[in-house]
Amino acid sequence: MPESADIVFDSRTALWRSRSFILYWCARTSTNAAYQMQAVAIGYQIYVLSNDPFDLALVGLVQFIPIVALSLLIGQIADQYDRRAAVRACQIVKCLAAVALTIGSAGGWLGRDSILAILFVSGIARAFETPTMHTLVPGLVPRSLLPRAIAAAVSATQTAVICGPAIGGMIYSWSGQPTAVYGVCAAIFFVASVLISLVKLKLPPLERKAVTLQTLLAGFSYIQSRPVILGALLLDLFAVLLGGVSALYPIFARDVLQAGDAAPFVTGLLRSAPAVGALLTSVVLAHISLDRNMGRVLFASVAVYGLSIMVFALSTSLVLSLVLLAIYGASDSISVVIRQSLVQTHTPNEMLGRVMAINSMFTGTSGTLGEFRAGTVAASFDAVASALIGGAGALAVALLWTRLFPGLYRVDTIASKQI
Image 1 (cartoon, rainbow, N blue to C red):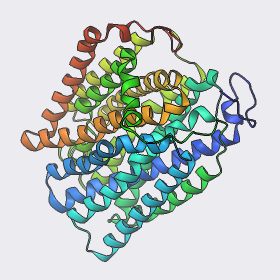
Image 2 (image 1 turned 135 degrees about the vertical axis):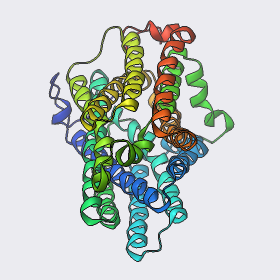
Image 3 (image 1 turned 90 degrees about the horizontal axis):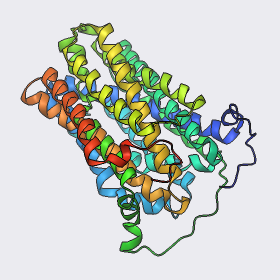
């Protein structure tokens, strides 16, 4: 891989002496922070409007649909066009959606259906943005630093997840309405579009090829031919689909933890807590790469992920709940770094967009459809039962995958030739 001219090679400081990597990190942090702020405001606003947990499930569903419906198109665009331009366009669309939420909330005409419609448009932009943003990393650092760069990029996301929900919940609580939150988000999305425009990549120009059924499905064929990568993606898909509980945070804040008037702020804290654990873990992994027993570490992290959710479901203490969610986030961070390192290290650049689009479809499906699952089960039973069932399901998946994908369990290093 060509090495960027603005990178100074030092085993520990090279990442942070690259101007383009810093710009990328700031853009990724800011846009994810705004997305998390917006998620808190939308979730609590809809729950206040309808008082129906199923509407929280619909929030996840309208963001899930674009990821699945457009995944093949997303990968094709990422492999044939300027990836920075695609990310920039996504920021502008999200900015305009946030402006619509701001105007609608201020004008008093924003109801459940209109919120979901605007969120659907924003979800389309995010569906294009997420995998394309990931494909930029190999053009910013040399191959030897890729696992650390991925860990640092994960830390960008987790920093945003820590700051975004807490800030969004605080602004909502102080103002008593979501209008200010949406306005701040619109400004941040615009800033992110400027930052990503300044990033410089050092990769060969992408060759445009005729779109055929074979090129559209090339990413699936590539993943299917590598059982270790397929197993890692499916492990994340089913574990997060079952174990995801973010849709339940407003219910836990108001009804389980009895937060009263502070419920919006506590909702933000609950959203931030997993990111605290994830951020601390990813910062460590950005300096000390995982290079032994990676398969075993991956499965152990998923098992801890499921167990932490089961205990969280039974907690009535805010402090204990936050600690458990931090553990939940730390274990998920380890899984993300290992999985993305496997995919990005063993995928050629000319196919990386399509493979990362599928990866994003898996992760996006698990996250958004996981919210739908959690909300639906909570509507049928209650939030505690939904979290308990989900945590037990994630633990069961980790155990089952050791039988279904033994090669993944035996992976030792990222560079392993058995992948």
